[in-house]
Length: 610
Image 1 (cartoon, rainbow, N blue to C red):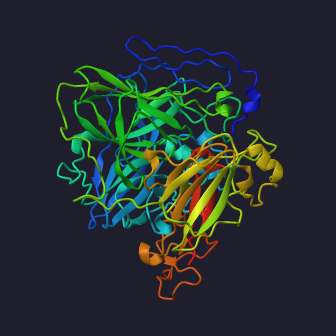
Image 2 (cartoon, one colour; image 1 turned 180 degrees about the vertical axis):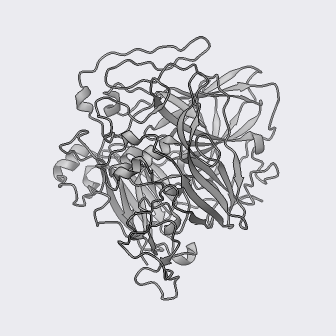
Image 3 (cartoon, rainbow, N blue to C red; image 1 turned 90 degrees about the vertical axis):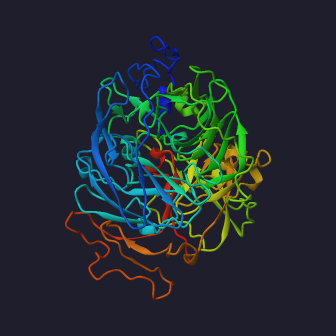
């Protein structure tokens, strides 16, 4: 966390309050260093379910970013939000099919940014004009997507300046993707305002219909759960700020919210049939890692990660979810009596630097109320892959051909707040970038010398978690002093391990695109970087930063018959009619999915080179 925790060292005390009659206990900590939401009664609003757009290879999808308003709680007023299409907050769920391209026509009709006063124009790439004309960059998180359609943080769309084309090939396994804004250094502001939505990639095994061969719950029994945390101002508006320690208009390092949201409602309720449900859950928060469980500690099953189904359901009573991670769950409410309730809860304490400000674990998200109906009567499958009518089993983790060491750190500077967040001790604009070779399998050792968790996301690829190993961080840093920011730094940690590697939890053993890099540990993942032939496009193509122009040209070394830019494209440094300087871009990014950290400056470019 990058907030000025030292300024809060004199903070003491606190209390846990209870909301009005009929509500569960909710946090009401009163400390001078954090803001607090107005009191809200839990479990009075029904859980909304986003609308669905079904992708067709013959019909483009229209996605429009709009400024709108939403009521987050029954007792609060409608307040300004951002959303996609006709939703009042967040966006519709897109359902696509493996092997069938999804074409999106994207445009922005946003007005003045609802967090205009909170944008920090000292951060890399943030212009003063973005307060009145907020830029956006739509990213399909988890998609194996051509680089020009990946939502590059520098490929920015201004409001009312044309339509951008996105082509998502969907040439990958069925899985749970999502789309959200990715604009440089204001990603947190745009996503927190509402620019995010689900994207389910189906196939002939997992059809999302009652007739699917796996027998999984579908239709009304398959529900997206978009979990977030927020702080609200006394007038009910969303607060991007968490503490008066950091002046308005300056970057914060992230904060625990004190109100839990599911699908855009504060502490909603849902009446469920007494049978099996499939919940497609995402931690779409800006900051917190959660340990999720049900209030009666009942057993449930994790059946998939970001990149699709596990080999078999994993029975558990809790699991941890970091920002950006998705989990496919089966939950059986059959043991509940009609009218009985169970809550989705969290008990993971915030990191030390958040706790010292007075932030506490946000304990609950939503309530499920058992109805009279029996619901989905199918049982939990014994296996999900490798049988008749099932996809192939997930293979053993591949043997890497090389090891790449990368670091996560929090360099300090003379500013308020006193830190930025860094990968490899570099800024986004620094030229030293990773260049894995297409067709190779690498082990990435993510060396987290901070005490905080950092969920690390790689664009383009899925990977497997190999494990985590504790690190003697003080000795490691003493032996390898960290140089000034701007010099790559990720020394070999081999001589400083504090114990053996612990393998991944069973519920995170599938294909993933985001990994919880635990504080004070080295987290190892194994990732294969695909070739152009496997992808059906050049992952190292050069493209324009102007999203209204859909040209690419091959990188050096690629064959000459790759698609060339059209004759009317803007060259690097050109200024089109909307006044944005355009330039040539190349490659993808990898970053921390704590969105404040990504914004400043825990995001780096990388290229998959031939």
